[in-house]
Image (cartoon, rainbow, N blue to C red):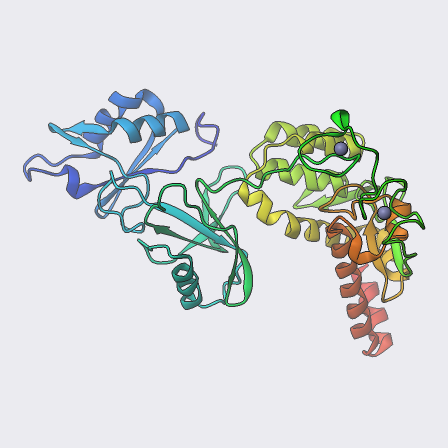
Length: 407
Ligand SMILES: [Zn+2]
Ligand SMILES: [Zn+2]
């Protein structure tokens, strides 16, 4: 909270001290370096720091960082190019030669480095650095803490023209995600919600309406005429703010120390913060309904980190809802062991992709959506049953005492 630098730090630029020191009797000092950098970017310089043979140059905006990277500086009549990445960790000794940073996410920390090396081999990439480990950053200031977040990264030789690496990989048998600059974004295909063909929308569709499940004309999902029609037992289809299982259900929920009006509010709010959109976060928190919170959240420009962390965030929110909202907890407790929770909404990621009738009367394996929310709720309910079972084995009088103490 010391200055006006909107408290956000940008990645530093690097300079090898040995590249600027040419004569021993006139050593380049931080003050001299400051003057030279200021000539290029004015007062956008934030900090100059020398650590052994490496200068770190912190600036106040992305624009000035880009400018400095392109123009370099001249000091004691030498033109120097700055390094975009730390030359000692990226294995890059010539600033004009670019390296490519790749990030590996979703792999347990316990997986051996040799498995990562094997994966790199298989992908045919040429590592320029050793395997490095990311640290947790403050969600707002982006400053680094000393704790690892489990993600690995490394620098490799740039890929041949147009070549990119696949996003989903398997390392030591574990599914993990690989990210790098220039990788194609996951594209949302244009899908018509009338005939379910790609490439056009409902508004300019010339086809007859078709069933989302079997793609035949003349009926809707859940109709006995559908090839995948099958009344489902043990499925609880839920949606909407009146159902306690739904994220739209209004309830007091404290997530990461912030108070929210529903699980949807908490989810969209955290999404906004993690994607650096503080204005939307504020609006979401003030939204009266979960639907309006979702509408604001849907407009947020998301990033790769968000894509990889949304599932675990949702799990965390549902676990907290179970701990904090009695009505939700009781609902989970009341269902049978083999119950399948199904969010019956048209959302193909979190829901079944079908309405309530469609969900309840379509073979589970044919639901067009992933039903991720339903699966998460199922896991939380299962955990709770296990805990209950475990405590039931203990002397009941002891539990009573414990419960009273906790309350
Ligand atoms: Zn169509
Ligand atoms: Zn059908």
